[in-house]
Structures are given as structure tokens and as C-alpha cells.
Length: 471
Image 1 (cartoon, rainbow, N blue to C red):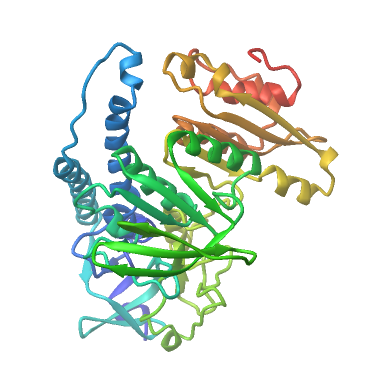
Image 2: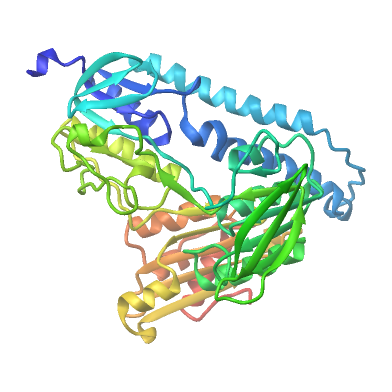
């Protein structure tokens, strides 16, 4: 088959953050492009049932909680909140519609064809979609991920008793008692939504601490903050059974390291133990591909798979399952296909938990830095509490801190971790600094506007040098 006989230069499978960005960028570069998507709307999990709708619920529930817990009263605004959950859901759905419609508009603007249906490989340059064959010189696999099931536990989003993250967004009423299985990002975010709206929330985590992968100090501080908010944690605990009778679920749990079991009851159980790559149903073998032991597609630095002309990005490849990582990879893979140089620095990918306060980090944890450099003495750490930050104080946001980890020899910043109301925005400064190889001194001597939360990053950098001002 010659280049001229292909239907498209680029065919992207999946329209999530990685896929739609790859398709738009390919269109911008003058490549004839199509995107295969089976949903009724574009945007994948992130825009439809993930990042975007959860943030809409988090934001709305923050207002309700601020009124209900007395925060607003402290500032002289006395109100008695009344929850209108259907309206809260409506504003979530409206945010999703605006953004997914926006993707459809951008497809038209950049001449990207939307092929509706599911793609199945017939060979490395051909797929079938809804009974029709589509060919492309380059095929980009960007099918994302789905919820990891918990063995022996059946999710039924319709009954709203045992739900996954999608079902937890659609609850018709506030649970009296919600049990979240998994102390990671998604569980803590959605647990926060329903706790703020009135639910008692118990979080069961197999590990001995929440937020695996985050810096140890940040994990401990976050645990303390969530407990103060009303979360009940059962750490080092595994769920062995969930039995549903009517509208009540009974969970059987036991210590992760062995021991006597116990049971608790809940009217809603959120299963949130992680996500797995969506590679089933693609017939990858027909394209000459296979997955690794984690179900991922292995790629090289340019996002090429082992088969010429087939590329892969996002949640289906190794690395953190994050929308912004997928977006950057989508741009890079399109540029590589077009003969340009598309690069993603996977050492500088920020992570954010959109709870209150937010939790964010980029680069190495202190533990990883010590392991990498081989000696604790080769790592310098600076910390600054948000309690000492003037903007946090005026906003009644005393919880949290910023931690900067640097190489003791070169002073180069290796990692930045933060808990603050706007940590997700603050972390961008840290990522930019690290991308350009900044030292802690570079950050410390960069003028930061006053009063802002970001001054805490400056102070933490000054603490690395042993000279913070406001503590």
C-alpha cells in the first residue's frame, strides 16, 4: 500500500486528553487526520466522567461547606445553606457539555474527522469501525484507562450502593455513610465532595498511608488535615468482601498483614483502587503488538511502538495516568509524525489532588532523592508552613506547607511538594523552574508578588539556604 492509497495520514484511536490533542495538533500540522471515538461526546473519561465533572462538584461543594462549617461566618457573612443537589448536578453537566462541544468545534476548525464507533485493528495500517475499514499511514493508540475492579466486589452504578468514580458523580442523594475503598487521588476527591455535603466518610486503604507516590511528609500532613475535616481512616486494611442487601452494603475487612476481620455497614461504597489501560478489544495482535505484564503498550522516547507506523500515548503506556501528561504526549507524537521533534520531559510531570486544601507535587520525593543520590547528606530540604503565609492567613487557610528538595552539591531543585488552597496552581512555578534547571537560590532570589500564596515557595527555597524570613 502506497502513501497515496491511505485514507488518512494520521488516525487517532480515542478522544481523551491525549487523543483529541494529538488529532488537533496533527491537523494544525497539515496532516489529514481522523479520530475514532465511541462515546456520544468527545473528551474521553477526563471531560465526560473524570477530571472535569469531579472538579465542578468539588468547587460547588466547597461553597456549601464554607457556609455550613462556619468559615463564611468568621468573615462576617452569615448564611444558612440549603443544598439543591439537582442544581449542583446540572451545573456539572453544563460544564461538561460546554467543554465537550468545544472539542467538537476544534475538530471542525482543524479539519479533523470524527469517526464514531470502536476501532479494531486488522493490520498495522488498518482498523474496522462500525463494519467499515479505515486505513492510515500512522495510527496513534490513545484509548485511555478504566476503573480497576476489586476482585469479588460487583460495581452497580444504577443501584448507587456500590459505585465506581463514574457512579459517585451521579448520586441522587447524599449518603449517610460512604465507605471509600482506596486512599488515592480519586477516592479522596470524591469522598471530599460527599463529606462536605453531609456524608460520614470512611476511607479504607491497603497501605499504611494515603496518597501512594507522594512525599512522606506531605502524606502524613494530608492525613492529619483530612482527619480534622472528619474523614475516618482505616489504614493497612484490606476489604475482603462486600455484601449488598437492599440499599445497605456490609464490608468485611481485615488487617493487610493478617489478623481478625471486622465488618462495617454503609449505604454507599466507592471502589477507587486505581485504573488500568484500555487495550482489550483493540485486537493488538493483528497489528503485531502485545502488552506488557501491566497491560501497557511499550514505546520508545518518540512514542513509537514496536511496529512501524503505530504509536501510543497516555494511559495505555507506562507512566502516571494523568490528563496533562497525555496532552503533552499528544502534541509530541503529532510533531514526531510530522517530522518535527516532539519531546516530553517525564521527570517534570506535576500531580495534583483537588481536595481542600489542594495537594500537589512535581519531581522527586525526599525518599526518592536520597535513594537516587545515595546519601541523605547529599539532599537539602527547605520547608515553610502556610500558617506563616500572609495571604493564607487573611483567607483563613492555615493548613498546609511547601517543601523543596534540592541537591546539596549543586543546589538544583529535585522536587517540590505543597499543600495549600491553590497548590495546583502554585506547582506550575515549580515545574517551570525545574524544567529550566533552577536552583533553590534561583527561586529564593526571584521576586514574588505580595501577598500571594506563592510566596510560600520562595520562603521554602530560602529555607533550603537556611534563611527563611517569616518563620
